[in-house]
Image (tube, rainbow, N blue to C red; front, top):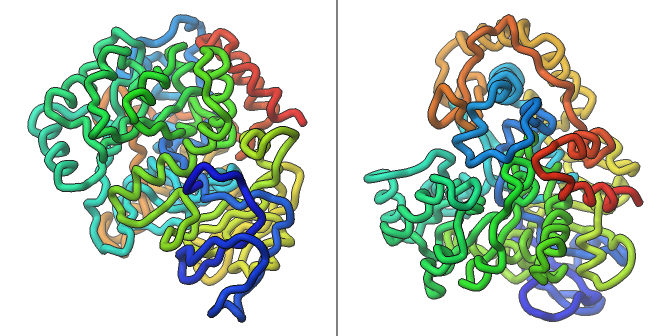
Length: 496
C-alpha cells in the first residue's frame, strides 16, 4: 500500500513487532535463517485494517431505532433525547461496563479481529490502565512513553478548551474529534466553523463524521494543512439519511478513513463499512474505486497516525508496526474488488505487533501463536490468542467470555449488585483497583459519559448480538426506517 503498484508474490519479514522488509519472490534474507515461515498461499497480505471510529463499550448492543420515528434526526444532540435511548443504550452499556468490563473488552476485540482490524479508535476510559491486544489508537505511545500524542473528544469543545486543542495540534499532537455530526444546515455545523475560526483545520486534525459540513465550508480547509475525516456512512444513513460529502472532502486533499461506529447504528466491523462505502459511492455517482475504499482502512489512516506517532502504520514498509491482515480474495475481478468483497469467512490471519492473534487454526499453529482458544466464525474454525483476565499466561475460552456476558444480560439487577460490591473493595482508583469502565457517549442527563440507571430494577438488556454480519443484523437493518432502504443492498454482499 506504499505506491500505485499492483499486488505481487513476495514475503513480509517481521522482527520484534516491526516490519523489517518486504521483498518480491521467494528469496531468503540474511539474519532470518531461523525465522518461522508462514505460507498463506494465494491470500492477500495487507497492512492491518484500522477502524478509525467506534464506541467499543456499546458493541454488545444491537441496532437501535426509536419506535414510531421515520423522520431523520437533525444531529447528534437530537437522538440522545429520544424516549428509548437511555433505556436501550446507555443503561445496558453502563451495566456491562461495571459488571463485566474484562469480558466486554474481550468480546469487542474478537469482533474487531473477526473483521480484519488490528487497531481501533474509541475505547472506554477506566478507573485504571488496562491492556489490549488490538492496538488502542487513543492511547498508543509508539515507544515514547508519552500519553499526549493523540487527544480525543466526543463532547463539543468551545472557547478555551477548543483553543487548547488547537495549541496541542500546533505542537504536533493529533486531535480526533466528533465534529459536525448531523444534517447539513443543522446547528452542529458550528463544531467545524468554530474550529476553522480558531485555525484548527490542521494536518493532525481528524474529524469524525463532519456530515453537516456543506460544500462551501469544505473550501475553508487549506490543502497545505489537509488532515483527515472519518467516514461512517452506515451510522450517518441510519440516523440522518445523509452522509459526508466525500468528493468535497477529497478535493481538499483531506484523507478519508472509515470507521464502523458502534453497535446501535453501525456495521459489525470495517469489512461491512467498506461495502457501505461502495454502495454510497455508486448511489451518489462519486466514482470511488475499490482501491480508494481499501485505502480508507489502511494507508489513509496510517499516514494520519504516523504524523502523530512517527512510526509507519497502514503500510507494509520497513520500520512499520507489524500489524498485518491476511485475507482471501472473494469473488472475481481486480485484487481490490476481491479484497473489498471479503467477509468474515475470508479473514485468514490477523497479526498485531508481530504476534498472530486471530486466524485459521492451521495458520495459527504454523505461526506458533500464543495460547489461544478455538471458536467458529464465518463457518471456519479459528484460534484466538486473547489472554485471560485472571491468568494472562493462558487464553480465555469464548464459552467463558460469553457465559460471563450472558449472566449480566439475563439478570442485570444481580450484576449491578455484584459490581457495586466489587467496586467497594479497596480503593476504587489506582493500579490495584478492580477494573471499571466508563462508556463515552453522553446521554440526555449528563455530558461526556453515560450515567447509572435511575431505576435499576427496571433495566432490561437485549440479547447479545453475534460478532459477524448475520441474518439477525440484516433483519434489523431492513426494519430501520430512516435510511429508506438505502442500506439494504449490504445484505447481498454477505450471502455468498
